[in-house]
Image (tube, rainbow over all chains, first blue to last red; front, top):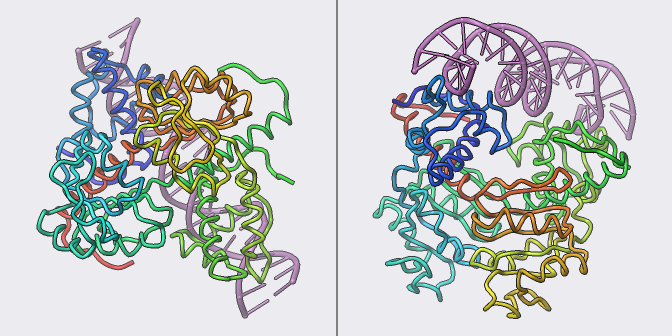
Length: 226
Length: 226
DNA sequence: GCGTGTGAAACAGTTCACAGCA
DNA sequence: TGCTGTGAACTGTTTCACACGC
């Protein structure tokens, strides 16, 4: 049922997440169908872009009608893999790690935190706010727990200096994907998926934009429309 | 001193942040110069890419020598605007908001949290862990505080349902940029910079990658090198 | 008529390859 | 010789425009 093996532009995959979210909002609002034009308008994309993107993943539009909201939601969830449950482990229970452990969004996307680890042995065996039946484990337990519980994903929220060694541990223990929050470029084998949330980069993008807008404003005065 | 107004590829701006981080690591290690080849190797980019990217922002390389680490760091920080201090406000003190308020990375990039707001009036006037001299304010105080304290950046960590109205408040109050953590596509005027950290998207990208790697592995068995 | 799916054209970004300077 | 900066070639992505189905 999954059509093309490769050849899908990476930007299209990222946009797929945005389409899903918008479609879910439409479904909550009770809309049955949506056109590529409406969908694009809500997300700041052209209608052609929306159609081309969705067509990469299969033909789930209906000529003259548009896209049936819940039909597409179902397909997209399947394509993204969020219709399954992924057992995941979180490493590093600092402030960010604790906030993430209690974050509802993981569950919503099928990520189930079944184990958490921290290097601080004093934290060992403590429960974790927001997680039922999970206690903090020492790093020494990582390999065995990952293997025993068949954990497929690792979430890294340790300081940058330790992130690569934690990633290596996770990879050796057998995870198939890593979500990295440490501000450093990790190296993992090509067989392991890697996705990063890089706060420092986002902060810098923002200040760059503000900076260049100020510069632009100095050059030309008036500007309007769109 | 700032060369080209526009025409710099957006991906190049994002990579600039990565260069900066790597250069900072080199500086800590005491390296005085670095070639585009070394820099690229550490970040998984080609040497040509590195040279072209840095050249977009000015000519700070030295033929035969490479790039002088602290010279480039200084330039890049100036370009990104992280050599200044940006007064910022955070809205929404849930778990994520609290974790971010205590996050050291903001200060490091010149973001100074001088005010925090929350819709829950019971939280009003409480101090915030990790922030000196800052107390939680009610939403009603937002407009006046932003204006009085000349706050330029807003950080949104409220639930998705409230994010757009908070963004509108911030924009009306006069912020020049918004960092959004709520999982929703915000609409802001073109004169306001917007940068988003979207956890749901990252989770989905990760599960998509793991999914497609599994698919790919099923198709072909062996594969090696690089 | 409305709205999708899709080749073809246009555009953007990356890689190549080399001239030129220290 | 070592290494940058950059036009030219190439690759990837987006936009355009239209044939076809409801």
